[in-house]
Length: 202
Image 1 (cartoon, rainbow, N blue to C red):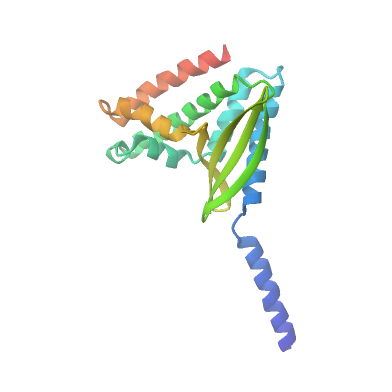
Image 2 (cartoon, one colour):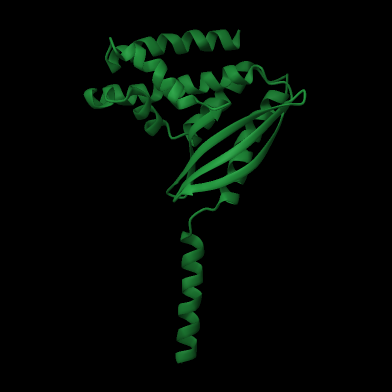
């Protein structure tokens, strides 16, 4: 009886630990590779329209990027000054802006090779993944910042040749927000998104 109880407790511990253990570097690396390959495979196919490709990027941004956290970061203290409705509107517009930015970067894609060369957990639930892009024997280092939250992964930043995309966006928006509030920025961003979208699909 005692032996059976000990075995049961041990088995329960193994099951509980396995299902609730944090992700490791290999997990996040495999997840990122899958997400990247999904987009690259679309851009390898010339028969797929630009509109379909952009929609796929938008879905990936909505699903796999920490949209609200990034949006809050890029506007700084203007976030606290805005109403909840204005904030929610900005998050949606900013995620659309991000998808269009990535879409613009992908326009120059021409079968470049990539390799995820390293993945490190820099602190609990926060990972840094280094990716090497190769084109015509020229190599470019891209670093992804990814966090784990509630057993899901979310991209926090993308650093290309030592330039953080999120810090670049914060700098870009801060120049506008010196003179305007978040609601006014939403109006500007909505117009910019529409113009960018039309440029990318036409």
